[in-house]
Amino acid sequence: MNKLIITVLAKDRPGIIAHVTQVLFGLECNLENVNQMILQDQFAGFFLVESPPSLDRDNLQTNLDNQTKDTGLVIHVNDLDENNGSAMDNKGDIFLITTIGPDQKGLVARFSAIIARHHGNIINLKAVFKGGPDPRNNVMSYQVWVTPELDSAAMFADLRTKAAELGLDIRIQHKNIFDAINKI
Amino acid sequence: MFEDHEIISTIEMVKNEHLDVRAVTLGVNLFDCISHDLGTFRHNIRNKILTHAASLKSVCDEVGDKYGIQVVNKRISISPIALVGAAFSPDQMVEIAHELNDIAKTVDIDFIGGFSALVEKGMATGDLALIAALPRALAQTERVCGSVNVATTKAGINMDAVLQMSRAIKQAAALTSDADGLACAKLCVFANIPEDMPFMAGAYLGVGVADAVINVGVSGPGVVKRAIERHLENGPMTLGNIAEVIKRTACKVTRVGELIGREVAKNLDVRFGVVDLSLAPTPTVGDSIGEIFQALGLSHIGVPGPTAALAMLNDAVKKGGAFASSHVGGLSGAFIPVSEDLNIAHAAHQGYLSLEKLEALTSVCSVGLDMVPVPGDITEETLAGIIADEMAIGMINAKTTACRIIPVPGKKAGESVYFGGLLGEAKIMAVPHMMETNAFMRYGGRIPAPIHSLKN
Image: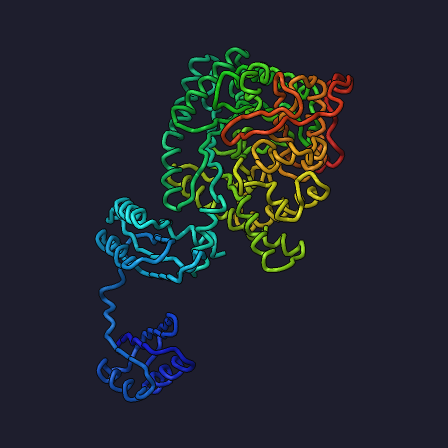
């Protein structure tokens, strides 16, 4: 059995997941995990499947391409290397780094560069810049995996300095405070 | 994974609605420090407290930074000095207060509570010495807080102690006349005092509690007020719906307190005690119990209706908090301290809130007559009468009540007092009929416990 990860991109419309999963079902692939999101009007889906021994990555890619022709779906199939494990398998904590303030060019690039320089791993990022007074329309929120080996104090200090330079309000908080307040 | 609104609302609670942890209080048992020799006793209590509290402030700050929630006050509560220092004279008790004050400075905390006595059924030698020492002890120190429990539902009211405490309060005020009687702001008279309360001035460590324990007091008036306002902006609500909003908000606030408290306790390697759910205001706009009343549609706290509103608020806070934590304790309700709450102080100044209405409110709030400045020439009997009335409310209703009253030397009703910091400022409240003779307070003895105390 092969573990494969399938990425599907398309302009959002009804029926994308139904179409892809019906094709996978017909190819006797076992669906293990699915995640999807909509960014403005664009659909992105991730399908983790176990395929039969006769169906390797290239075969599956060909089959999917043929059976979704003219649907506008962009599909990419990759092998899943389970031996490497996740970056979050090691000991660590999740911190939410949130900036609130008006859009400026290069904001994500600047903040993610600082996080990368300190070897922080961004595991989720949301950024919305619509203008206006509502903070929900001018917010970046990074969920960052912070390991004990990482100099978190230095990384947080650099992020705060950058936010001050750019006139942004920044909050750096351990994930558990959001769990405590929102996950009851 | 969090939704945008979860992230933003959490940040708003901290940034704009004054959500913080109002007090992390380390309780330290001093019974193993007892000695008949004052020098040895002082040495023992210093060693014991410093052993547990040396890193209290830094740990609180680290945990606060980690979660982006400020721990505003770091405090210590200790076993009642009247018990552990029962062998000492009033003068020696004052020396103990100085030692405690110095310890508080050493570990950089703002208050240490437990210069206290439990005298609801009678006063022993140590209790008498402590009460005699209280005025000087509080006037000569900055960080020592005192409390005396004079009544319980099980024991009744010790009226001898009520009168003695009235006298002690007057003396403490006189000794700090240059500071508007500030020493009285550090002194509470209680009925049914809780033994695990993190808030000052009444915090002490009960005799049935662990050797060292962390108790946490949350804040949240601003968060509750905004939650009510946000929901009302979306259209009319019934009071049942509003109570539900308060309950859910209190639940969130309590979970924050417990998260912080448990981590501080773990890092200090001591037991976690309780979360005190009390909504504790500060003299800051947006951090006020009085503003919650206004959010509920009452123009001021003193107009008809706030007792019902406060009853609903207190109950909803308790329900939300009890769902959030299995270890709820202390006072756990809403505070209505006059000078510490800008909005309540204004209501009193503008004549909406009288002492009588305040007393009525205390039948449903979590504390009592708190931070109430009164004229300095109030008689001992009148002051004792106010205390006795408040104690009776606590005794009969099986709840905690307390008096933290400041007779301001040389000042009359309507004049201003300024205590500073979290203690705030206010106009002196009028006390009707305060110069009348009051023989009732001179009978002494004990008002017997009510019939419903017989539960065995």
